Image (cartoon, rainbow, N blue to C red; front, side):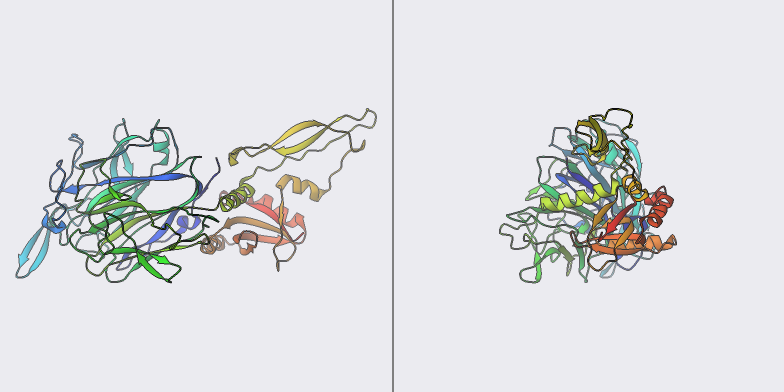
Length: 530
């Protein structure tokens, strides 16, 4: 299976910054592979612990919130379930992310009227460990998870009234250990405020899964997370690092998670930039209107996602969705698309996005080009093989050659030694020069880059995004290197190198010095303009 996993490098060095809007969205994961994705989840606050709330007209702040708790387990104080009905077959999970979030200014809360105004009155010191929950996979038992806090506004001076937080855990290994993804998933002990909050309470969880499937078309996946308030100013997210199919129709999907979308309050929307009219076009489907897109529901495509317990029609401000972007005649996105811009905005009903995923079919050649670059990075060093024919002996009809074993798995693409029946080229020993020995040892590749001085370059990493290349260069500068970059015109990728020379040996010596460093595991030498 052709697949590629690109973990965004700058994610490791991202520094959180707090503002009146919360924590800006950042890119978390990028994947290029033949496969698809699944989104499930549920809310964790309602008007009853086990009975579903079916009244979609009731407003969020009209409900005295109670924890949902459906697992019949006295050890948990909150729990809800969601199920994967298909697929039944075993699939390899490339990435699985679990998110949970809530409004949590205090353990309990009430609203008190003072004239025409309502005042929030909270009691009970809230738990700082919002990242600790319980997670249960199908036919399993609860496991404790300590996730990463992406943002917790409590005690930050931001969002004082409702104090939203969001947490994340990578559960890829847990899901890959299952015999099947099919079944019911339960998340328990997600924390939120019970009672009344000005504007309404909101809390829940989602599980987003990307899996490999040879029968699927090549796709690009990327996920973003953060926590921002969309109020008067729009919030925009830009997806790059892909190239659409060369010809014909192609599918593009988004998955979203937000808090505080009220069904009765309108004007909230999400729109996509239309390249043909140079303006944003609001998205909608049968359940989600253009001007009331976030409406307290959990949907997949044009249908409500009902494989949940409780199956609330009104999720009280907690919105999850996965939908295909309508593009029947390529009027929004065409076969030359390399970037997609999404924009959240509202006029009356403010809301809090915390998760965005983007998925689109891509050009097969683009996937192969990326895979080739990754092969160049992780390929094993070719062993030095010398053939000697002793003058006193008759020439052997066997010579040793090196070839790569054909394999669909990059990890198995290692050199092997085979014997073939050929006539001997020479009776004399084959003597390799020092440079030839080095080239064999390091598996040096070559390329043409106009304007770049000929010679050997020690490349540390390669990126399709200039921004990622800049982040990596900044990291190297902090390590006291002097990185530089060039663009390969054959694929427009950014190559970051730390030294170069007309002669191979000085660069080779640096390669030997750096190759065992933890952050230089994929360092390699490229010959430019030979």
